Amino acid sequence: MPATIIVGTQWGDEGKGRFTDLFAKEMHLVVRYQGGHNAGHTLVVDGETFALQLIPSGVLYSHITPVIGNGVVVDPKVLLDEVSMLEERGVDCSKLKVSGNAHLILPYHQLIDRVTERHLGKNALGTTKRGIGPAYADKAARVGIRVQDLYDPKMFREKLTLVLKDKAPMLAKVYNQLSPTVDEIADVYLNDLAPRLEPYVADTVNLVHEALEAGQHVLFEGAQATFLDLDHGTYPFVTSSNPIAGGAGPGAGVGPRHIDRVIGVAKAYVTRVGAGPFPTELFDETGAAIVERGHEFGTNTGRQRRPGWFDAVMLRHAVRLNSLSELAITKLDVLDAFDEVKVCVAYEVDGKRLRHLPDNQSVLHRVTPVYETFPGWGGDLSGATEPGDLPVRVHDYVAFLQDQVGVPIRLLGVGPGRDQYVQLRA
Ligand code: IMP
Image 1 (cartoon, rainbow, N blue to C red):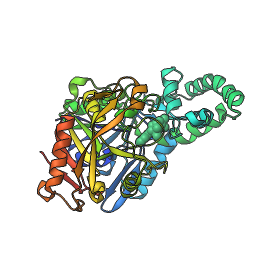
Image 2 (image 1 turned 180 degrees about the vertical axis):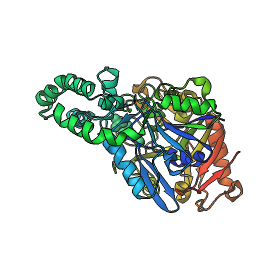
Image 3 (image 1 turned 90 degrees about the vertical axis):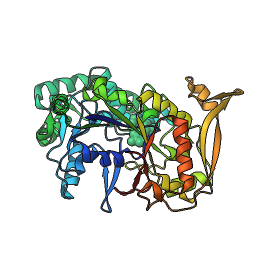
């Protein structure tokens, strides 16, 4: 299985990082293909917690080359701070590679993200305000500045001058904000950040293909998740890239025939950060208990996540969109405390029952979830390591989920620790 993609199947924060970390044992390269430091991976290794934003989770293994692909938007300061933080804690980052074709997040991107969100008022998307959308917008408008431009100072200044010609007056006149000048940005990016980033800059497409040609295992790691996908998510309440498995193509430079396995990660319930439709959202004590037991607060932003029951309608769609070959379920232990556990199996709207996600989002806003209710298992799963350690009720629940979504469930996460999981199938 030389090439595997791992994707989130809900609205993010499914705990992909912990499974990426698990699979990383067999991998040579772990490649991120989209997103930026809007992502947050929390890994617990030997009781120590690591919160990563940009560097692929595989960095914690010395045999792995962590790769930031061309599809990622990179804030070099954040990246270098993350490298320093890891190195201070004894993690060697010398193998890290960053694509020269990745686009840079520049100070005006963050400024634009902040002011446009404020300007939208009650219609705000709830972005992470990290400049992700504005950086991808510039990429699509062909005025983006790439990592490689840092090493051509004349070109960097020319591009920056051109882009600020539009953006500085727009920020001043529409939003009453002062943009940093060309000289201010160039001074930091060219004189400070560029030389420190240089050792990591590489031709990552070549690196990935050399690894695949040598029969090495490559793991492509999606950030965010299926329903935050720019094309297939709940637009406009989405991120500005393609987290779905197909995003690995443009974001890392591989074709579909290279991919052997696509692992979807889903929480045993659902959470969402920011605005947007959420059919199974819970506003009651059960929701509050999920947030508390699951520590459902953003890794980076600290925002409380919105909780809800597992939604098999969404998952069926995620199976289709990503060509999932299998599923890993995380945070099953969070449901230990509940007397009953619900699974949404269909939606009802306008007197009709829908098994599949409606294409029209106005309809999605009006659906009522149809639930199947299971008795809770009344036990602590956090110590389970083998299928035999799980109560029959958990097996029944998992078998039901599997039947609903139509792909094998291979792994169950039962706690945040690196070893707190149960493998159901080889
Ligand atoms: P942006 O990616 O910062 O532009 O935010 C767009 C939407 O994606 C917002 O609803 C964010 O809350 C959401 N989002 C972005 N990154 C993550 C993530 O890593 N986990 C969960 N939600 C995210």
